[in-house]
Image (cartoon, rainbow, N blue to C red; front, side, top):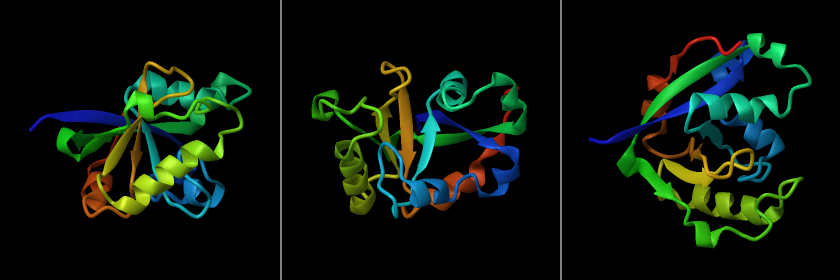
Length: 150
């Protein structure tokens, strides 16, 4: 079975809850509305670091983070076609149009993961993970700590 790797950079103090989707549920994200749990992963270690670093004042703060890695079966992925992206998908703050896409996908339960482009590096991809999907717990249980990013 073919697989891809996903990476998540989290503050060490939140390591035990890194895959609960609560941060996204409480605050919303580019691809989900407040109230909708979702876990964001990057397709590469470097992208996971960049996605966090753009929000930090000092890269040395990365020493407070841990990098987690999971393996996702290819058949658990759904790819968002580039031609279905709204024109404003890269806008800051994140537009409602992208959250509507993510919310619809989360509610559909159609796949464990949705492949979306990164705003930080648009030719790279991020994975949205649905914590309500039946395969989610197996994915979360498989997470392993990778090297320290800092």
